[in-house]
Figure 1 (cartoon, rainbow, N blue to C red):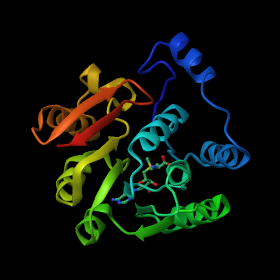
Figure 2 (figure 1 turned 180 degrees about the vertical axis):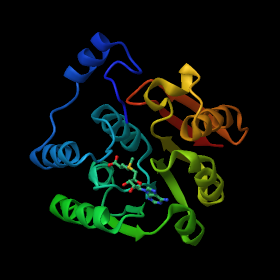
Figure 3 (figure 1 turned 90 degrees about the horizontal axis):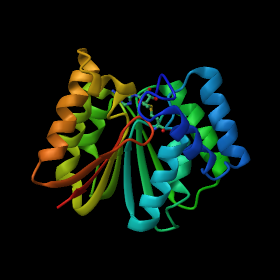
Length: 213
Ligand SMILES: C[S@@+](CC[C@H](N)C(=O)[O-])C[C@H]1O[C@@H](n2cnc3c(N)ncnc32)[C@H](O)[C@@H]1O
C-alpha cells in the first residue's frame, strides 16, 4: 500500500491522473469505504483500472489471484470475465474471506468464483488445471515462491500482474528490510527471466506486468 500519495508519482501528476479515473459504482464505493475504515489493503483505483484494460485486451478464461482480501479486486476482475470465465482466489484469513464472499455475492458476477481458504504456498501446488491470467498481491517476501509455483500452471501468453513492486518508494530508495529486499530481488528476477517479457509501471504502488513466453 502507498503510504504517501507522492511516494511513487509526483503529487500533482497523481491527483491529475486520479481525476481521469472512471467513477466507481455504489458497491465498489462501499468496498473502498469498508477498506478505508477497517485498514484493509485493497488495490489502488488506478491499479483496478489498469486491470480492467488488461483483462479487456486479454479476455482470459481462467484467472488466479493470490491475496483475496475483502474481494475488491475479485469484483473488479470478475466483471471483466464472461459467463465462461473462472476466477480462483486465495486468502489465509477466514474472517476477511467471509467479508469478501459477502461483497462478491452482492456483485452478482457472471463468472464462476472459487475461493480458496489457506496459505498461498500450500494452496498453489494443489490448484488444478492451467491459468491464463494471474494477479499476485499477497505476502511480499513470498512473491518469488508464488511465481515458482504458478509458472508451470500458466499457459504460453498468460499475463501476470504483480502489485506493490515499488513498495511505497522503499524499493528504489534502497531501504533494507525483509519485504523491500524481497521485492527488489523479485523485480530483478522478473525483469531478466528469459521466460517472461516484463514491464514495471509507476502505477499505484508499482505494478508489474509480465507475459509468459
Ligand atoms: C494486499 S491484500 C489483497 C488485496 C486484494 N487483491 C484487492 O486488491 O482487493 C493481501 C491479502 O493476502 C492475505 N494473506 C496474507 N498472507 C497470506 C498467505 N500466506 N496466503 C494467502 N493469503 C494471505 C491477507 O490476509 C490479505 O487479505
